[in-house]
Image (cartoon, rainbow, N blue to C red; front, side, top):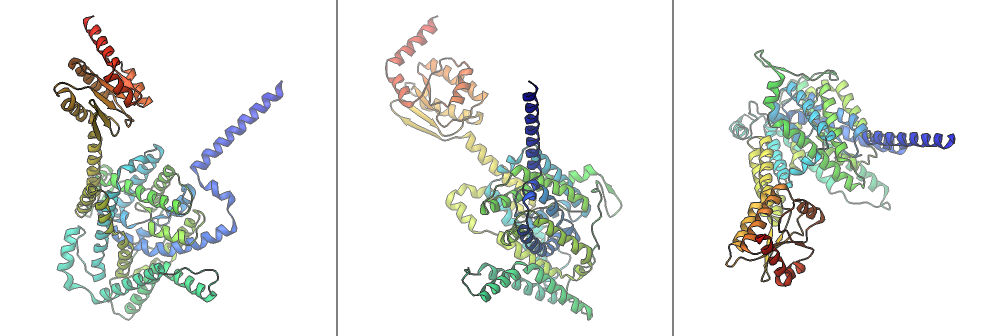
Length: 593
């Protein structure tokens, strides 16, 4: 008698352990690939991590400039993502770190104040992690494609033009876009020849290497060895082109500086060594000694505190999904939200500003054959080594070379073909695109908010004015094209009144609800009123092809004189045959009683 009970206890314990391990694997995706890790994966992850690291270092330095922060903050922000994402991420290709878009948003919100940038990272991470735990990722679905495209196009122009002053070696140019354009042209006579020449050379080299990589032909295994080796070398050089160009420019700048010729604008002094591990600041001190409290800082962040977390999540998840589809694996969107949220929270303890997924570095990661998220650990180690040993060398990095890296990185984001595509498919979608695009030049975060607001109004209009197809079979048949919710009820009532109840004589109506998948309390009350008015006019309203869930709601409301059929034909027979006479008799009988 005891043996089955023991076996039951054991089986229940094993089952509980299984589900606990399953939940742990869902929370820590590293457990799904780490037990199967092998030498080949290690080799591929080392190559990919090293390549991405050489790409990440110059880009991080450059994006810190876009954020208006000292260049070391770009590197501070570049290593935490690889470490955290290896534990929590579900996309093997994705790399987290500074990006052009997030740097621009950060600049517009914190105004070049490092303490505020670090605090912003903490708050953004907390919001993103909370969204993941509350399963609020669906909110990203309300940011439409035209809004995203309008934002990225405007951001690319803003970022790209913002680097023209560094190519020209100009100083004292404001950050606000329109003032930046004015003063760049106003001060063009103050351009430094050394910066202009070096910047243009860097631009040309980066463009040439990018085109070489793009136009490399396919070589089969039967191709000569020297051809395949040559292609590999060109591919390798083109992949790490940013690092090569910045190193070459730094060597040139160092050479001129060593001989006493200061012809280039250099990055200058940077903090040496690894960032201190400390809690993010919760207050800020102005130049005049005034202390700004946490509440005042959050108030100053304004709408940026809503826009930046959402844009970070949107950018990261879009990249993850794209590469997951390309490489035949699936991601967990809510786990991705958690990974980026924890990255930003932990990053704030090492003086990082908000980060997200980088499309360019993710593409490099994928092309070099990364096998697991462990490639990000290698990238992080490369960045940490540069912080530990190379910071003094960054003094000689010319700002013109970093500007060239940024311009080449954001140029592909200007997708002018999308305007023609939107015009061809649905012209009205150009409205949120144009609103987002134009407002972005005034204030970046407000551009996104304005675009989402316009898209929301368009969405609400479609809900309030659903498609309604009317056909006349001697009896009016009205076919609803979508869900029937309270904003649409006034529109439906108006059409029913003008087409049926106010006609002479009043006409019966069949309401085809085949496409109605949602209904609410307000609609039920309005239907009750419609049925009453049809009864007073001596005609009837019949509901046809109601979905089972909708029929259940309607029946539970106990609507008087309710009639429904499974088909239009049945409703037409009721209205044109003897059943209609019976229905009138029922009405007369109930009235006399």
